[in-house]
Image (tube, rainbow, N blue to C red; front, side, top):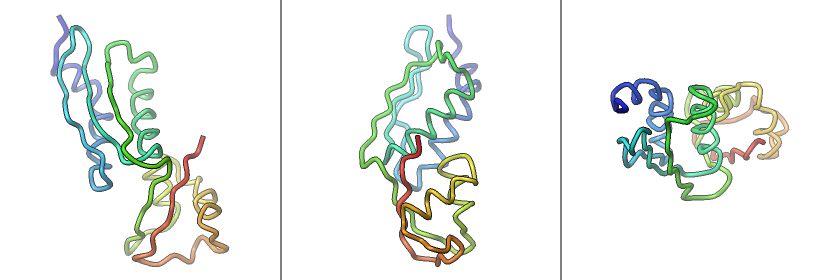
Length: 130
């Protein structure tokens, strides 16, 4: 018999990813057992955030044989983001892609000639990076 608490602990980084993206519209609707598997039901606001959830799942267990997931993307492929005080594109890239070095792709998607010239309140589009 599967142990719900053990599986929650194993997949804690995935649960944390949902929590990290809650301010952007991610939500986890159900975390329970489905037979011998952990069942995760949730929603994410874009394919960009869905990819971060997938990255977290694959880092925990590339086979995810003890996980059943139903994650629905309720929005566009891209993700919008409003620049906050203290942000830079590397920081935004690290949050949404897990890698600060994707900032040139963010700059290109937003036609930013100088990625260092962003300002609080500016809304940018984060592209899906494959």
